[in-house]
Length: 362
Ligand code: DP6
Image (tube, rainbow, N blue to C red; front, side):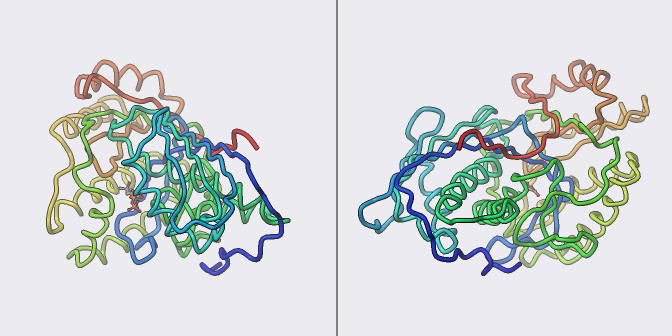
């Protein structure tokens, strides 16, 4: 498919008012997206686990205007109060997707949104937030056309989410989602995420991710600034190639259930992401001393017990602790007794890999 396939044909139906609610999850990348081209296209393929416990629920109520407005017409409510300061981000998103949803200026929208995780916890809400909003808007488009296949709906929702925030396109459907064209993954595309299409060993069913909140401060580097650091980065070409190789290896790992190899790929990806930030200009260190303490504790625990626990990081100091379902009792115990002391206010969010976004009304 190309971008043009997402331009709509003429709308056949008229819709005056309505509402749509979606609950959309966040996700954690195993092979990281870091570096993008024009139009939010990724420099390399990425793959993620879906995190249902970190979700955004968004309701969009729409009312057709008598005349098309000049600017986008919407009110934004976040957790019960109006949020003017969130509006520019939404306006930018709407402007980016207007060509694909040409009705946007014909309606007034009330957007009400809330997160299942604490605000400013350092957990990125852009993936869950942008995907939930894209899904609600797609619900309106679905009403405007006489037929739309479920497959097209999902692909276009992911395509639009990507234009809001790259990683958001991995939050639409599936427990494991791949985004970005990759030689070995059939159907993969830079334009949208797809449900991982190959065999997944039972070792990865109900995998867990406990997020340790090491630093709840504002992001030190916005993702846009971060991605831009990969332009003219001395190691960029090699890094993008490495992501392809790691994805190749992960396909085999998902099939065979080789947890040792899984750990190597996932931890190396996390450290490479941070290495890219440390070796760019300007350079950043986003880990905190407690991030390193936790990593060392995880390594020592693995050495001592033979456990398959491992970690990954996003572009911040918080640590995602990953472990299989059959180790959850030991790992809960380990987290409580050895890791929580390194978390701000001893806070953590316990998660389980989920299945993707859900329509809450229609
Ligand atoms: C480190 O999706 O937040 O989490 O496209 O600029 O919105 P934008 O970036 P964003 O970047 C996420 C980067 C990452 C790795 C990943 O999720 O793959």
